[in-house]
Amino acid sequence: MAVAGAAAHGAVRDDLGEVFRRDYARVVGVAARVLGSRDEAEDVAQEVFLAFGRSSVPAGEAPGWLSVAAAHTALNHLRTGRRRTAREESLAAVPPVEPDVADAVVTREERSRVRAALGRLPKKQAVALVLRHSGLSYTEVATALDMSPGSVGTTVRRAESALRKELNRHASSD
Image (tube, rainbow, N blue to C red; front, side):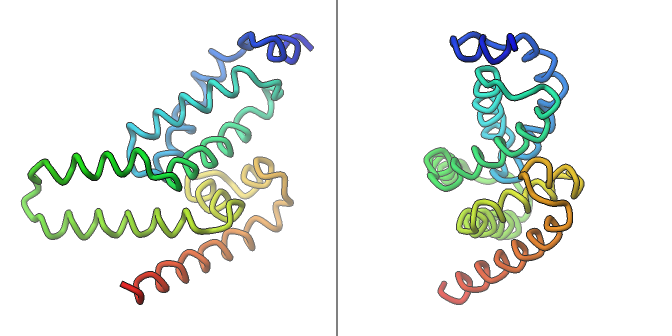
């Protein structure tokens, strides 16, 4: 098991380049769905691939592991809000160039509300929802989250319901 030995000694695994080329777009896609920013999603992808490069995860399990890691890492970034706060402050200083500023503001605010509500969901529900809406099949989500394929639908439906409740709860308190 050369990969495990190399990972234990801080070396980068031999298959990292191949896995990176194969799975980069998916990792960025998952993170972008959570964060709403390709730039931030690429930062998350970098963190995820660095972690994978030091891991002993079998290559066959890489796609699921990377998808879950991307969702978890993106949710962590979302919850801390450190980059989002800086981005929102910089956006406020730049005059909008859209023809209808009101539509752009409403859309941005809606996305921000959804992301904030997603960050308040239980982590497993949030990850299942993000992975499923990122195009992963029920089987892929089940494998990635180590759950039965039959429970994925239930978990996703509960997550959608919880997300709606969070959105409604915070909309009524505004």
